[in-house]
Amino acid sequence: MSEIKKSRQKIMMVNSILFLALLAWGGIASLSMKKASISEMENRKLTPFPKYTDSALWSGEYFKQLELYYADNFPLRNQWISMSGSFRNKFGFQSGEIKIYDQVNDMDTADIKDTAQTALNTILPDDGATGAVKKKVFVFKNRAFEMFGGGPGMGKAYADVINSYNRLLKPNVQVYNLIIPVALEFELTEKYANMQKPNRPAIENIYNAQDNEIKKVWAIDEIRNHRSEYIYFNTDHHWTSLGAYYAYKAFCETAGLTPVSLDTVTYKTKDSFLGSLYRLTRDPGLKGNPDSVRYYLFKDSVIFFIGSTTIGYWSKSKLYGEGASGPNSYSVFLQGDLPIVKMETQHKNGRKIAVVKESYGNAFAPFLINNYEKVIVVDQRYYTGDFLAMLKSEGINELLFINNIFAAHTPYYIEKIKGLMKKGGNQTVKP
Image (cartoon, rainbow, N blue to C red):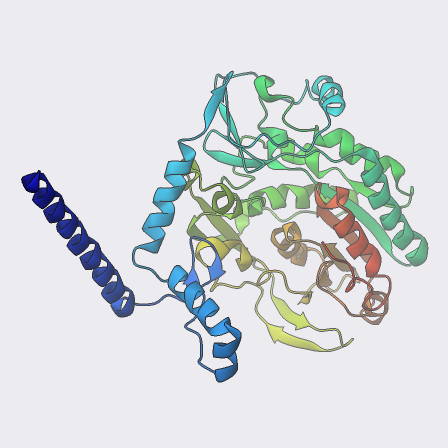
């Protein structure tokens, strides 16, 4: 018995030494390693080392921030996060031929039954590929897709808000409405026909509810003609600049304009872009299928300005945020989600347009400099100035509302657009 006891004591001592050595190594590595300020993998700022104050110490805030700092800066942190993501992926299980992660779908079962027949002529034949639902995202063929499930009542509410602008601004301002479909609309196969509601009937519902004077832009039909091209990102919820271009072509047809030909335009590309849906799911298939962000360098000269809530104040800047990189690469367009920007061109045709948008509009708006004398872009989420007074001050005679189909069926975005009617009116709208 004494020999067994001695052996156990030796094992315990070895374990203790190894444990202490591991702690010491971790402490030394943590102190000596170069500290990053931003995590590109998580697309967020890391917690900085806290500044010492007596009040922070006695309130406990100092130690709370210190704990967060070490949690954000431990050795090999990114490798551990990647390993954890890979480990979690292995817990998906097979249900039929669909690998289920989170049993979530915002669609009512009755809605699913009705939409399957409507979608039949727009879906692709089954090719045997297996999809996966993960964190409310459909992962299919190493691509990630959001699933639309909005109802007609909310679409009608969106149309009502657009109508209110038309009734207020006509006949001096021509209003357009462009609803952007989601990527899954063009990738569904017969096996997964029930994964979302078809987009075209939902868009048609909005267009049918709007005033006759408002011009409808059927971007979905033009985009569908190019469904096999790189029109939406693999790992991000946005469309690519090529997808935005086909929507621009549809807009030009509606507005009586001639679209620029991409054959004549040079471009730059930002590679290795892993977008929002990869960061949400951490799916290894998405990681192996990164995106590239292309932005076009148009021949037409343009002067780009960043505005403010003060009418008439504009600060000269650049059309593209070329410093954007990594997970923020989509922010190259218009320098990201600025509240208001303006583009002035050499076209002296009297056509001056304002674009009200969310982030999808960032990739779309630059194309308009090929056709308009002036383009003002307003982010409905962030602009708090006097929108109507700005339109009048800038001589705007055309107004385009461009939103993705989710935004057009979400109370938050609808209220944000409505809030623009009153100076600062959308400040109180919360998600």
